[in-house]
Image (cartoon, rainbow, N blue to C red; front, side, top):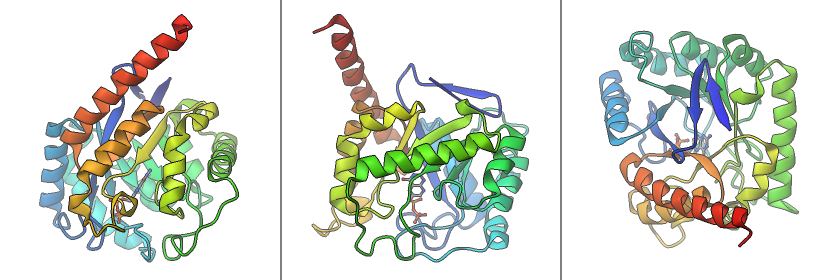
Length: 287
Ligand code: HH2
């Protein structure tokens, strides 16, 4: 399988890709306020690439539980100086996705050189697919139940894995109908987005069932609440749990992992990918 984002072709033969996170927001749950200054955001992008990030996801709207939407104009005000300074037209080595659910913000970021849109609402904005299709950009479609403001208030499913799979299949059809190429799509079960800790564990345990959708899977567990909020662990104390969850996700078929902690995640993911390869080789031998 490949992922084609504006002609940049990502392959997963050498293990999963690592997507670093830089939030240009005052209020993201883990790095909020740290990279509001464009120079600091740009420095962070370069630092994550040096740590081994294959691409960096730039966001201007926190989607933590309880967060309110951020107007498109404000998202652009935060993102534009960062994208301009990154000078993506000149520096072809930099691969940037923009974490936005707004089609206008996505269009502006793509026009400033981003390769892909990471849409946590999975086409919640009906104009998004056309914006992506027109530019041949990559598109991450994530599952979310509800909206950030209320999504963690008693989320319920009959069968979380089936419901996420069906939802993503429907969003793939919508994207395809609007002209987005099949190989531009990546799918994400949306760990922590309208899910209890038990739902998140179930999705990780059954991630392989989502491979039936035929597209690479992205999984984002980095520093999230299910990794230890109940035990009183703060976001910076959730690295070990996050690496364990990342390893399981990769062993179960994740092709891209989204993280604040690029170096450590890369190392953990590489080992998990080796275990997955060994398991698949054994299956092919009929063992
Ligand atoms: N998680 C967050 C944001 N965007 N995108 C995808 N595709 N998958 C995820 O799991 C995901 C995501 C939440 O993390 P973060 O960006 O650190 O926090 P905030 O939303 O508070 O900015």
